[in-house]
Image (cartoon, rainbow, N blue to C red; front, side, top):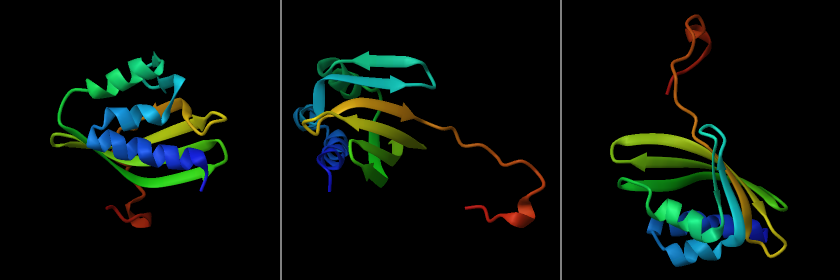
Length: 124
């Protein structure tokens, strides 16, 4: 298991537990967090921890899958805020110390499939 994978696992565990000290320990001081869909960026460990600590609502996150390859890790998460649920895809890059240096977070919206392929698929 790579050091970065361990850091990402600890990151999600700490986020769910609201353990902001452990969460911060997974991050490089100069971490950059980006949300391409909203074109938002947060720079620096202190600012990013605060961003998560102050996120509104009673949110919870569960990791569905982790794929790791060297200094890059991708996670698929299930995220809830109150009664709303969504899935997220998060790309992590690590530094030479195994800490998270860059995060790109995607929150795709669910949608109904096009008409005409009902006979080819199973809905779940």
